[in-house]
Image 1: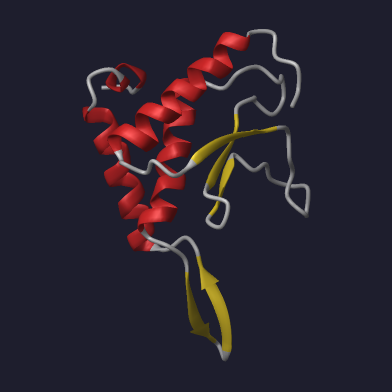
Image 2 (image 1 turned 90 degrees about the horizontal axis):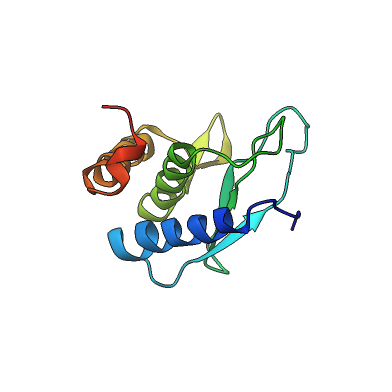
Length: 132
């Protein structure tokens, strides 16, 4: 893990994770993992977060790509809403042009992400991090 200038930011991210994932959505078995800068296999896009169903961990990248400064809370909340949607609408296999593909992001999934964001916005504390 990289050395952070402000360790309070990491504590704050853990508190946010605890409030959102465990209390608001009720997924007590999931743990937080902070990831360092990671690029995809092609090197053209950055990974904001991912979920591991077997280990029951949600990993978040908490630094901005260019300047390595802490990300805004709004970005972290939206990334958490996306990763929680993976639990609620899990990936499935589908036949496409004679091959089996894994559908991870599909229209019903994105509707669930929107529902999660609305649920987070309704929380009195977290509503301050979203624009009205």
